[in-house]
Image (cartoon, rainbow, N blue to C red; front, top):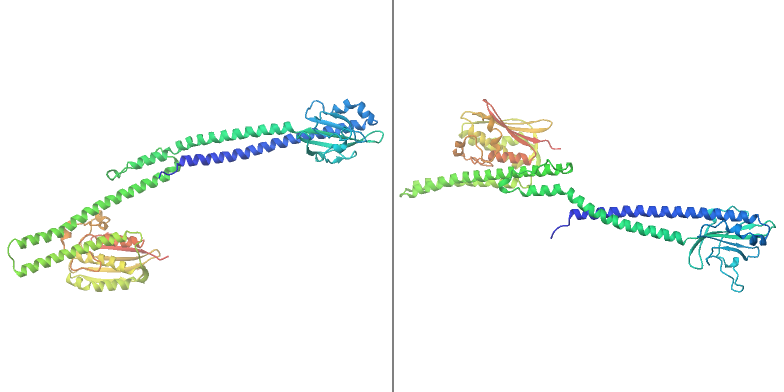
Length: 486
């Protein structure tokens, strides 16, 4: 099943973010406009109410209200949304302007509008100051939203008249509704446009990833040296490209190493098989004595042992490279273990006329069996190449950072160009040494299979340590460095 498009997902996320921003900004603008309109209307209502009450207070009586109606209604002239009703001291409507049936309801009996027909409003006393807090909200008889102030006014003769100044808010709500609709339309159009542009921009921004994928697709078994070009890669992807190129380099090296290992393994396994087949063909060429056949079987058995050791070493290396290879670490006396190993090899050393000596002292934390195998491989290798009458020294020492175990033997020095490669699988400084006998070496030794030092390096890597060789005219030293336990 095809995965979800990253560009589409990012475009949707970008659209959702844009929608959220538009909603917040639109809501803020709408509320700000509503408050501004409301504040302006409140100011108009308050000023009109104050002016009307001041004009009414200058009149003598209720009859003066009717006689000077134009003077009072001039307060709301010029604004069709503003309305005014003036009630005489008896509560009857004396003046009305622009009410359009929205304010006082007429009395059922007399048909005249009175104060009783007004909605329940808070009446401002004639001596109180008119403020925005005195503005009330109600719905007119025609269903229109109304805001206004109901206040008393003291006439000169001492009577009290009532004034209602109100504003029909229908036009304001229609204005706000149109503004909200435009905000919604602009928001929807903006989100769609943002998603479209975002998708196009994201696809353009992701082009380097497609180029990386195209470059990676060029890597094949025959073109493992192909690398991803970093010249046109954005800085944010440089680390990714560097990691991919490093991975490709490791894959290339691993493949080359595997190819060399396979070729070397086939070559080394072919030698004992050829030896056994050649000896068998010679023996079968004519009748032989029992002794000849026994000699042939003994020779084939030695070659089979050599193949078995080679296969065992290859299997060990394969298991050791597995991430779940189990090590049983414990602390032990390295010098004591070197003594045990030297005692095990004592008979082989005597046959080769080689002396073994153990020196130093140190405690090391490692897998005991792997430690014995690594040292045994080095010791077997040293016995094989130490001239008769020579001496091999097994030494243990410790520093603040690591425990150092060395195997030093006399003999021909190893050329400097071979010191690092001798730990490669099937690598030999002198190819002719592959035919040397194994001298019956066992306990982890690989005889002359060319895998002994490779196993030593693998064991040290399993412990997080290292192995290196030093060689001069006096002696050759193989040094194991085990890290200190934290």
